[in-house]
Length: 437
Image (cartoon, rainbow, N blue to C red; front, side, top):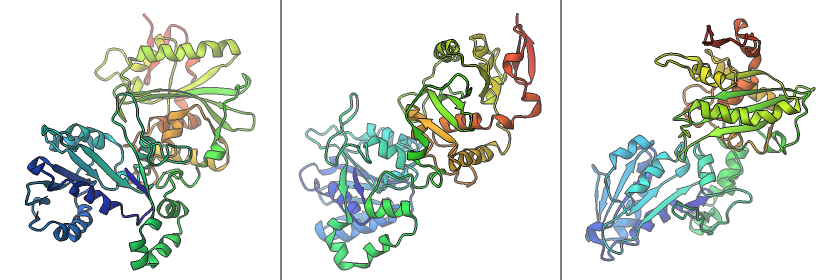
């Protein structure tokens, strides 16, 4: 991945990366595909290839209807778009030994990028296989790209290959506008344009290539890692403690443990997160397995004097539609009692505002060990259709759980009954009460 500031010549580098293997004997076997998130975004890339390819390769042809370059020696470069893993099926079974991704941070998550890796192949002996991407530290995919290439302060240096077991090696190369002397000489005002950006995060991203930002984040106006992340410490048993859960099987589940000090500051001090190998994929653990994990964790808490009087979970776990036993009942049987969290109309917007209020008042602290909450909370963007909400299509499980936890006072009056107050032979399932048998 070629990353860095704006104006570093990344797009030109990308299209030349494919072109360097044309005319070298691979012929029609050397096929490439260059992706952008949407079709209209391809126009600028195509324009740049026309500027260069017609000059460098006599006899080359561009098909306007198919958006494809064809070299006289048979090589082809296609321009295509794709957004999600579902779009991969348009290319299933294809062979593209060269793949390019322009502005990788435009993609919300890595699912399309990862799925397309299976098409980077060739049956021709000695064929190079290359996946190339460009981007600036900006956009809704900022978080996953930063994580994948270990960017930011203390990350893997530019040019150093990252090798992880079971994965293809990857490397990022730094690009800077100050290296593009041609641009600075022909357009000296471009640098001033970047320096004049009023948004400090955007200026740091485009002028400095700074990855230690959360551009476009829903909480970017209030989130401050230095204020909101704290080192773990023993939670006094005298503090009010409770937990919250967002359930998931095919999607990740999240359990957060919260505590409030005498001054009203809320600490998120423990996290249990069930995720699979892919982004957005759950660990597919059965509810009784997760319940036993929670009970095992809390056995020591009981000996230390913690008393969980309020445990809030997504109301969907109490739904008995199409099932004989609800998720809530399975948890209760294992000794973990939940109440319905407030999740009515308007709860996402109001819950998000409460999180922002707590952050702004310096009343929300998160232990540094809660890695999934710390990974997703600062990075989650706004809803495309409602700026009052965060993006519920993103990896929002830990954020939802936090919302349930901080909105514990917003439940309806008939839900205020504490789950521990039910008789031992009665359990609550949704709005109904059942006698144990």
